[in-house]
Length: 420
Ligand SMILES: NC(=O)c1ccc[n+]([C@@H]2O[C@H](COP(=O)([O-])OP(=O)(O)OC[C@H]3O[C@@H](n4cnc5c(N)ncnc54)[C@H](O)[C@@H]3O)[C@@H](O)[C@H]2O)c1
Image 1 (cartoon, rainbow, N blue to C red):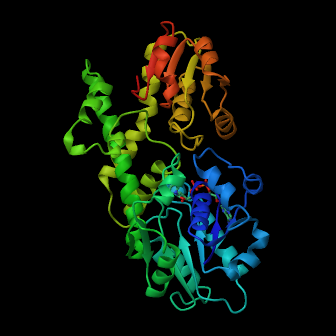
Image 2 (image 1 turned 45 degrees about the vertical axis):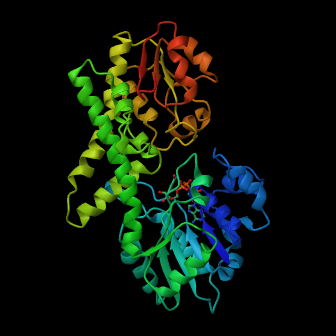
Image 3 (image 1 turned 90 degrees about the vertical axis):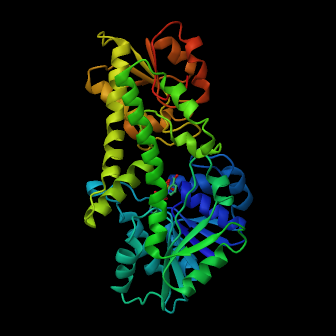
């Protein structure tokens, strides 16, 4: 099959290379010129284990990275068009669908005069009812009869950053939100070589499953964080030890999911914050004010302030001390800094007048500086940060910070990740 994929970020690049591995011919479209050129040169634009080898293997054989001006070749040849563009925070916490509809417009413009039946597939995370109540009416308003002229579906993605390739090619299950049999049959062909279950559900169910997954993870994290606040208020509780012992319960069955039932300084990254907000917003619009989601978000929003207060208690009133922030990416093993709790903790400290802040991350210094442009310093090495700072704060649980107690020479340490 021939497939065009819009967006070559974490999801789009992984999807493109995964489909190339399944034996399809893939055109991957990217608007960000720098990102496109990096990929064309055989390099990854972000840190992602295993994906670089796949890129080397399929680049210019079955995977063709292209700019928008080559869509006139790619789209008419394609059986399916996949959308893997960003769906960031929009107004009032709703998902911003601008990139998705921009890419749909580009698709329609690039179709030829007598186009073949194609399926447009939303792989971006979009709130339940987006495909049925926004995408389909949008196409129909342009004279397209969905189900006859073209198909529309969603195929949510469950990969984790830091494990993109492995999660994609060893997926637990493939979810297809479909509204007609023809589209379902075509999409089953895309995944014909996959052994895992391919589950066809309604359009809204497909989208909902993704939010069910992400909001559950966010809820587990906020629950854990709230419990850490309860423990802090009571006092005399070893929070890390308590959670480690909780995980020894046989009912968890050693599940890696248990790692989400652990406190920290709040969930971050691209997905959990925006997706929890978006489901809360869409549910409110539909007439139901979801109280658990409301409190999951409120607890998460509160965590940077709680951690900043803890740091200030450790630093004392002398605001001229240098506070060393260990970890800037949203999680270890990734250089993604989108919605990273480190930035929120730093902002809270700056707001309270602690302006001598220095950050260090094994891989994300430059990206963090580029995205946030905060008035702080950076060190190139862990040792330099240990020397320069008077107070040490772990904000990302990179394994290399595990020996900070031995290295700190008695300086106060605030372990926002309960990793020590
Ligand atoms: N990152 C994750 O772990 C993850 C996991 C599952 C689902 N998702 C969802 O997948 C979607 C993409 O996430 P991501 O992390 O890959 O985002 P990303 O920001 O890394 O990538 C999106 C890419 O789309 C490109 N783009 C935007 N409009 C375009 C257009 N018209 N044509 C071509 N390229 C275009 C952007 O330049 C960018 O490179 C989001 O909806 C996200 O919520 C992400």
